[in-house]
Length: 492
Image (cartoon, rainbow, N blue to C red; front, side):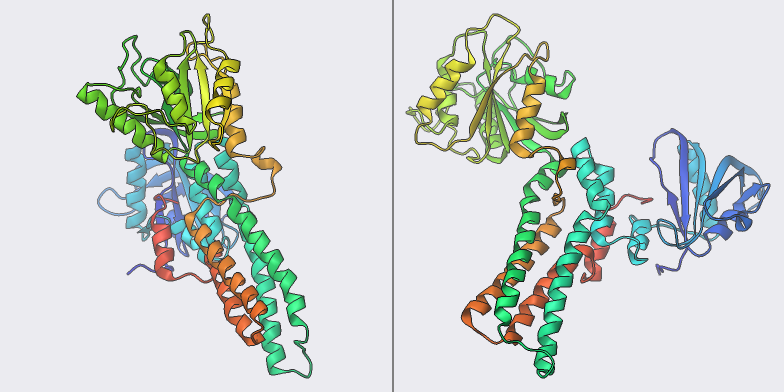
């Protein structure tokens, strides 16, 4: 039976070899258990909080009891000013997997229990050190793959979302309590013209919630990456652009048109923006059965893409295939000869912005930015397709990569995160809770317009209050909390 009063332990560092590895203990007997294993000039139980000691770890049971395991630094941290709010000991060992597992085994023999995934952070949550939104931010910090994603996670870890939610809940609770007081004690509290009083509060609260919800898209993209489909006719340089953005030779590049037969998906960081790059087969009409499958998958990638990069070989004159694909991307459908017309892209995500890249600007080019822009203006008349910029780039030299990063950043993120006081929502659970709260406050406004009694307001005010509480964990079911912490890594 798992108990929150157990002393738990786990390897808190990565599983590979390293210079240092840490075994962490937390719980009421963590210092005592570590003392049974530790041999130094001082006993750990005699040390003040946040002090460290050098010594050896030894085996505690069996025929080889007292045999040295490793030289370590033991850090003692006493409750309540620790990560878990409990007594904590961290044993910094040599970072070999075998050493760490032997130290962990001895800690288990000495009386500790192996921690469940996320149990250290769960204890921090239960101890009141952090709320649930901050606990979830811990894993977002660990999983962050870009500076922007890391800053967003750290902002949430520092309490940006908690502070906003707490402020909203306090307002709603106060108004709920006032209505209840007025209904119970009308001699001292009045509800006369109460609608005029609460209406601006509701408007302000819903505006704040919607500002938070406005960060949902950016938060999702920071967490998962911007799905970026790289399209173009065969041999336009799509795979070379992929390799440029990845910084490595990941895709095969040859002079033979149609080399890429399938979609290739890779993660990359462009500036401070995470991308999921999808290199696609050249889109054209073909009788090759394998290439037809590649073209079909390229079109499927466009259906889920957040961003489309169309690559044109600027060292060659614009081909019929280039023009057909450009027309299709900009909303003008070419007259198809049949259902298998290679340039038809009717299934693509119409909301995805398009950046057109004129590749090979390190060579003598025959296709210019003004030429493409003029064609686009003609083709997209009456269309709201978000073709935003035409950029020159060289997959060979890397020239234009910074301009591309700036364009992508401008499309999906306004300015730098550090300049913004808004909070990006990094979790779908938070989005759902905020949406529920907004809907509940909308029902209060509907009740105001309908002129129903004030006692009805409290039902939806409390519904909004509880929905917001799900974000911080104050109105959360235990089974959902279990599920959230089960997704954490071991040792955290």
